[in-house]
Image 1 (cartoon, helix red, strand yellow):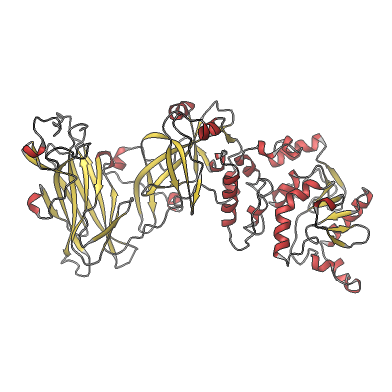
Image 2 (cartoon, helix red, strand yellow; image 1 turned 60 degrees about the horizontal axis):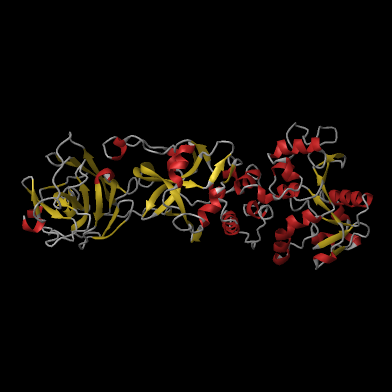
Length: 618
């Protein structure tokens, strides 16, 4: 730590904390680099020092020196001239130590250069609050010192932090409770509350918005100027490591009672109702559980970890939950989830498509002010296989929801920013899955397919023909028989209407069945006859020849719908639209919707298991 002697003006390096003398410290607003007096400037020889004295920042150092002399203090610390910023090691040490240095000062002088002497308290000549209250670095400079004396632009005293009436005004301006201005343990304030204190503050450099909060959270980490918003992510990761019980770190965003992107109407999911385009939703994609900046916490001051948070990790009746784990850009943690089939609209901008995807409500172990035990949940969109991303909303639900989830088995969640879908020429994208009736999906690779994503993207090899994928569905209303059907998509040769195009799709339907014990019967996976039809096991491949298919059709381009409407099956529609990947592009993909509509109530089919003979003997 370098200290400036108020009498001689010499700057001295002090290595050991025990050797640091009593000192005063200055809090101020930085001007431009040319206006401030640097450590290098302060070393200027006396004969050339006039140029230093002409800088705007010199006067406040002199004010500080004179005030310290009047207060009987021999040393001061001013960040402009007491840090050799050419040394990255010294700058890093200073920023990591700054909260402690302000905390250890005998007194802090806060110089409000934009507040005239004849104006009340902290207002500028225009009637606004001083810019000092909007700067990121001055947050710790307000909280850490034992006491602060505030001075106007002409160094006339405005008041002190120890004065109760002025402290009440400071609390009103900053939304920081008076006890934290008086030295209360900051660990008593939740992570979300402390973040909210910085929500309306800013810094000149993006990285400093994270670095200025290290002392508030008692965090030390290296400085990496140039990393941008990654600095704030690193700060949150360090907070999570040091305080894994306080999940209010994830309680950020706009507070709502239900997600704005949730699809409540089942017609959006399984029917033909078009999902409306939302430009705002399209502008953001699912992201990590971590916020991008403190401004995301502007509504989060009243979130705090619940009493059950430690119980959840150590004293659960089944087994202790795993602490949150940082994996790459994602976080894996165990939380209770609100059960039910929830669906949300996922917006893709290129191509412009809205896709219904599963929506999960993960219950945070947090309380929300005086709500009497309301449930606090994060809405998560599933964008990959066991991968979720959150939106910029936080849900506060009725306390009855919290009670219903509290005793449920914990579930592991992995959340990280969504990756681009990566549609290429010849691919398929399944938009509507008919999720309400799914038995599960299986790919049947041939030379024309090599992967299937959880978002329904089927990656194909250009120019190849053959079966692409099977989707297996149960009969609507069927809970016992295991009877269902498969929709099979195959790629044919190029369509004659567009020789440069990809091959047309062939859609087929095949009656299928599935047993809970994965067909561990003596004659497992053999065809089963019922309703005058032959049903094939979902666990056994069926040849690609059309002789097994109950119905089949080659789809026309650019848009066509295959429809099947015959009992005991539901009404089935497969709609295929050939679309350019981007507007004006000569590369195309096929957009597919599975639309499955219930019939009127009918007798539930008999299960192969319940029949007197096994499937193989039929």
